[in-house]
Length: 411
Ligand code: ZN
Image (cartoon, rainbow, N blue to C red):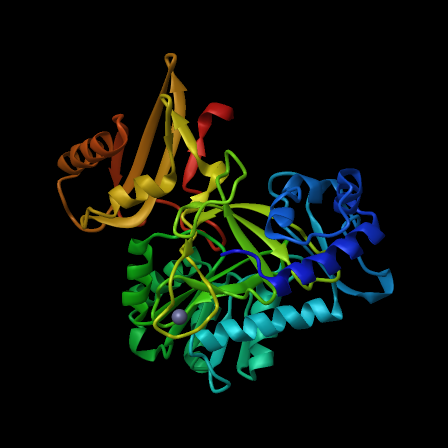
């Protein structure tokens, strides 16, 4: 998906503003002697920006507008170091709301829906993003925020919520709780808008069948606007993303070069109209691919496949590169297993070893299952893991992101 003329013009406006603001990227452009781009090649020679650059700009070094124009800041969670602060102008907040409204519309949600919002409100972009889009759409927001599952279920029944917005982990937790309490017939949910983490088909199927709802994947990240820059439509053929607000490239993470449409690589995003903190060629480290061709819905917005992992999630075990997604796909072939798993990597007696904890979904011969799973991993990936089958519900569920890979070699 090559950058077009309109987008190049928008990038030039951004470049002018970044140079004037003299922030890290403005300085980088000046050092490279670049003050505009005329061609696709010019654009592709622009330097990348990284999360680390954004951290170093803490607290307000990314601000590219006048301070009096900033109406709000958001911050990424900062679990792995210094947080990143993103300033927003009124127009940025409004643009984000418009994109989010479009997401709801693509999911077939209307102003007659009642949207229960369980992602957190506050510094991070989740809850408030879902809320803005909902209000722009004219639907009824039920701004619950995370946790307090009993109250969530009570409100869901009393207010007859029709849409649930949640992380996949929390949607699963709610689905299991509804099942356990036998209140399925009191729940009016029709759709789920699920964001913020990678999830497999198996987990999707479980949430969708236990709640009896259609699921929509929403994409986004705090550094860009927040959730809401893309979503799948009802044909479920990848996520449409809004190329009037962002330009998206897929690169080979090792070489930094663009890969052809259809090939997997790392998502790199350029904001086209952002004022508070525009970013050029920001490396997200999310792995996906652009889907060529047109969606049956007829929309011209291009499509991105599911986020299959993080370029930094790659595990090197016994000299073999492994992505959690590969293990997940293998586990997905066993109907005897639930969607939950945990991978632990350790270094024992001078050798790397991988332990995989999986949950049995019913009663089966654990010993036999352990061997079958280990053999399947060996034949697909090339080494034999140690597999432990545990009972359903044994592995941790989380209200935010479930940590599935624990590398004990670095602890
Ligand atoms: Zn579509």
